[in-house]
Length: 248
Image (cartoon, rainbow, N blue to C red):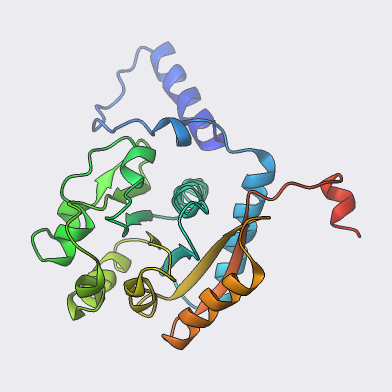
């Protein structure tokens, strides 16, 4: 549990002790099992470093849109995106949005414990407005847009000028907009969508993704005009204590 949650719980206990009735709150869905527990200290620290990396590359931005992708499926893009959003939302000054832009393999609705109807697909098609698509979570400053109905690829959506307007509308409301996107090497629409955001993070799985494949994914993004901010090495295990590793 975060320090913010602890403080809110303490304030609630004090109100009850004084006989005060807390103000009614909007019912919000619980986070899914994968997000409901505490983030391990090592992972938390690395996600904090990700924020520093992003802000150092985009220092003048009050609102930042980021696309998270990989070379292939199964490298942990959805998990990294959801947990990054969770960690960012621990800063009460930030308003954070996670968007599932992968209708072929949606996952964010499971992470956040919501249904997958009416999401990014409907938003891109003009069926929904941004206010209607964004769903509240148990964290008041963390929202999510699920993928929506999975029908066909995203190429026609990502290439539409409508998406540019959607991103601008979302950035007007949120400090961080995080897009969970399909693998770039098998989904050309990812690079197109990546060229319309402020920065791209490439997730590679340690001891699984070959260096030349990761380099090809990076080059594919760069050729499409994407601002590749950095590479996230996921599921890395230190063979020696981490503090020693960092000094070697």
